[in-house]
Structure formats: C-alpha cells, structure tokens
Amino acid sequence: MKVKVQNLDHREYSEMFRDEMIVIPANGAIEMGRSEAIRFLSQASPMTVDGQGKAIKPKKLKIVEDPEAHAAARHQPIKYSAPDGTDFRTEVAYKEHLKKMGENNVGEPVRRQRAPHSSKVKI
Image 1 (tube, one colour):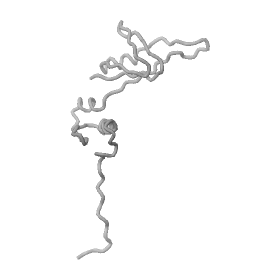
Image 2 (spheres, rainbow, N blue to C red; image 1 turned 90 degrees about the vertical axis):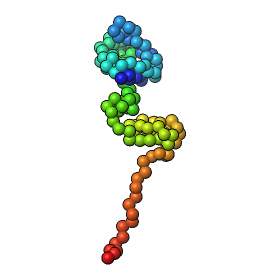
Image 3 (cartoon, rainbow, N blue to C red; image 1 turned 45 degrees about the vertical axis):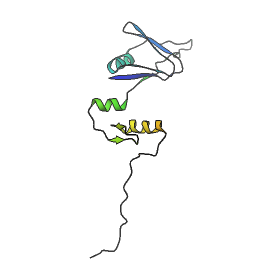
Image 4 (cartoon, one colour; image 1 turned 30 degrees about the vertical axis):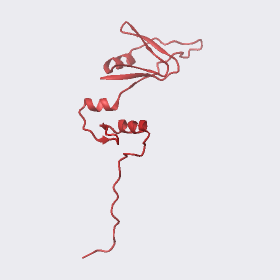
C-alpha cells in the first residue's frame, strides 16, 4: 500500500536511503510503499548542528495514510454515501470529500428525534 511521507519543515529535506538520494520539497510530500516509509523514517541520520550545538536540520517528517485505502485493504464495509453518489468506508474520508465539495452540512448524519413524552397514560 502506498503512503505519503510529508515534510513538515519550511526547508527541503534530502537524505540517502538504500543508495538513492531521497528529496522531499519544503512542506511537500512524496509517495512510497508503507514498509519503505517506516524504514526511511526510522533510519538514523547524522544530525547537523551549529556552533552552539543546536540542530540545524532536524528530521520533521511524518507518514500520512489515506484512510479510505487503509479501510479498503481491511475489507471494511461502506458506511457513508455522499450526495454525489460517492461511497466511503470511513467518516474522515467522507468529511474531507464534503469539504472539497463545499457542502459541509449536506449529507451529515441526521439524528432521529424522539416523539414527545406524554405524562398521561391512555387506556
């Protein structure tokens, strides 16, 4: 399964990984396999420090998984349907889709209201 490795820093990040230079643009992301991404993030890299011993270029990376692809890989049932007919397995993907459509309130789950309770008992 493919995931994104996102750079949270305002500077470009580059590092050697398996004899290949990996370059992630500032505030950008690259795609790679999930197991490779985990190995890449857990790989120890030399820390660059300035004259005062502060880290100049810390590793500010994170793995971002698509929740819909993750749920589909585990064969979860479809639980949400958008107004345009698109089906989703997770609430996160469903709400992201609605936000992209610009219809935040359309298609939200409707809570059923109970009938008013009467104190009089009918016989």
